[in-house]
Length: 243
Image (cartoon, rainbow, N blue to C red; front, side):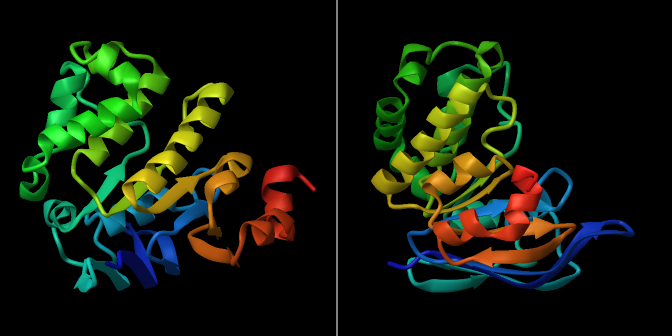
């Protein structure tokens, strides 16, 4: 059944500082949408609004899960996770003093996921074999690439229908960025996910995106209907290629 997100006229910020200015975007069922923008332009704030961590000052956020529409504004983060939306936050935000398996189990706290712990754990270990090999290793002692794998796997343990991924390439060596983006594409296809990915690495993001948006100073300045539109856009050339 359909799983999608719609953001309409969203304004949000921190105290007197407005970060998002009338943001509108859609993520349709089964799509991978990239939200492109350099640091400080509001990508993470938008993700936090969708997850209920930051409450908007205006606008609407709605999600369709299994064909049922839900208004997300005003909901607590745990209620949004319970609906089937998961976030892989920027910087991974793991529990460094817990081991791999313990971090994964913490991702399976919602009732719908608890009933599928064994299956989801097996899926995660199949998708990320290194995590199975290191299931007793402390998360804080792993490399950046391994921690990113664990953060993705922990989100999958919630049995999500919609996956939000915030800056998956941050802090990773170029070769690990490529493998991480490829893994996101693989997981989306195998798990049947709808994906919104905030990313500043343009060349990697568009490899897996169906379409995307460019956010500049808290506003959507361009919407690319296809991957080719994004590649050929003058604003993107200016921001990312210095042309």
